[in-house]
Image (cartoon, rainbow, N blue to C red; front, side, top):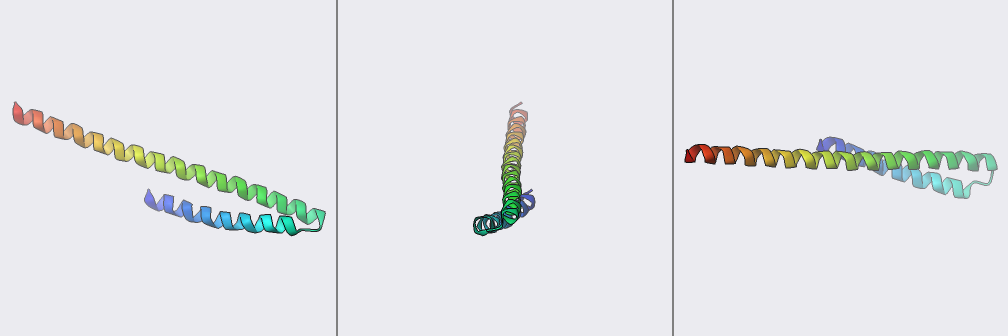
Length: 87
């Protein structure tokens, strides 16, 4: 799972750089048609960036839940072993 989060973080970094470039192009565009194209590009990249951010949060939450479940399962096994030893 860590590889997926790492891959998403790399994609997020690339998208952030592309978004910055698109915003710079939008601000510097003189032609209204080009300005509209750059605005659309920046909007799409912003949506993509937000999607990656949300996906990373979801994966991190899932990873935390799995780790927590693993700890709880181990605690149950340990408790069961202790009870079996006592009886």
